[in-house]
Amino acid sequence: MAGGGLSGPLQPALLLAAGALGFCALLTLNSGGYHYGVSDQAFYIPVVLDQMDPALFPHDDELIAAQDRFLFFDDWFAPLVRLTGLSLPVAFLAAHVLTLLLLYAAIIGIGRAVYRTWWAVGGLLFLMTARHQIPYTSANSVEGYFHPRMLAFAMGLSATALYLSGRTRWALVVVGLTVLVHPTIGCWFAVLVGGAMILGGGIAPRTVLAGAVVAVVGVVLTLGDSLRDQLVVMDATWLRVLATKGYLVTSDWPLVAWLTNLAITAFVFALYRYRRSLGQTSEREGALVAGCGLLLAVFVVSAPFSYAGVALAVQLQVNRVFWLIDAVGMVLLAGVLFEGPRGLRPTVPPAPVVPRRALVALAIALALTRGGYRGFVERPERPIVQVGLADSDWTELMRWAATQPVGTHFLADPVHAPRYGVSVRAASGRDVYLELIKDSALAIYSSDIAGRVARRIDDIGDFEALTVEHARGLAGQYAIDFLITEQRLDLPVATSAGPLVVYELAGPDPVVVRRPR
Image (cartoon, rainbow, N blue to C red; front, side, top):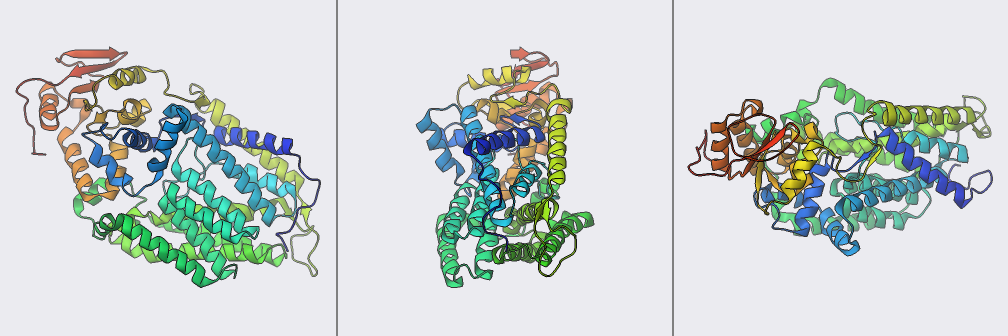
């Protein structure tokens, strides 16, 4: 049976601390470094700023609220920032480090419950630093920046470790806390761990059912109106805005998406069956794999509703259950790779477990090589750790924008966040006409917001071909104060940095363009 103590000498605290430092460093390198303000932080930074000062985004408040009404993250994170007195960049860095340390502890906890040697635990740690994308989910196995989804994932794996080690009730408590960090990821871990508890006999079904009923009632009472609004079929405009997010609606999935994610699940079942044939599995490990089967069942049941464009089915992003299944697969794969019997075939009685040190060493070498390449070679101009905003012409303008009165409204390239590294809202705390990538993602949660994004896409047209008349027309229609562009236009200049110029748009007699707001 796997699940007892580990053989070998007790690892000293100093070695574990060194391992934590190495794990955090290697994961950061394999993620291309840590950088503040990137990717989904285009939403999470503004939502924390908005929680700290509700008057900060008068033009974009409804846009931000579209997703924020379903989240609890800012409700506890913003007060913590106030209490500690940390700047937001430092607070996000501290949260990221905490996430990585929690992930490190969770992986060790899972390894100690599943494996019999420290070699396999170490091999799993190195495997988990290999950042990879889960097909057609928009989620990566790990992230190089702070994201509540990643913190929830680390907490969910901690709950998994608690369950595998026999601490069932504590596992339920941690799963409950995970929901407060990221509701959907917490929900999927509730299915995985709660399902394993029921199927493995670790807890009475009525106990889990009672907890689920309480949770559902709480959610309905808290979000009843908002949830009821989501039980609709998305219209053509809504789906058009989400067209760039092809992973969301299963009707947009190509055949390869189905094959790859179903293959991941089949691989998990095959790995478990092989380990079981070797006599290396415990009842709880088998129940956890059965929990993966429940996650797959949830996805299969939800797929027709997502295919039909039912808003709630799309918003839940049930396809991210494959992220959890992938993680369980990594645990089983490490067991097969890094420890096993002397032969490949099962024997009666089971052959002694032998750590495969050469394969662990190879995994370490590959992780170090990949991390070194991604961190130092792939993009040598980027620092490994960027606590605040990078020094650039764009950042200089964002510092200036932050000094403008609350409510100042900017017009910039709709794809300015990937182009310049950080969004206007995240960098300056000011409203922006359109940030295409993140605004389209927020449109998932509201038909009205989808309509807003669609109108603004249509009204701005080709940003590179923006004329003075068009810019002034947009200013009159949407109450825009400044335009940021690299174009040279016959407009009053407010400030500039490098090729970027900020033009004043507020003025008399604006021209109204194509359609009413």
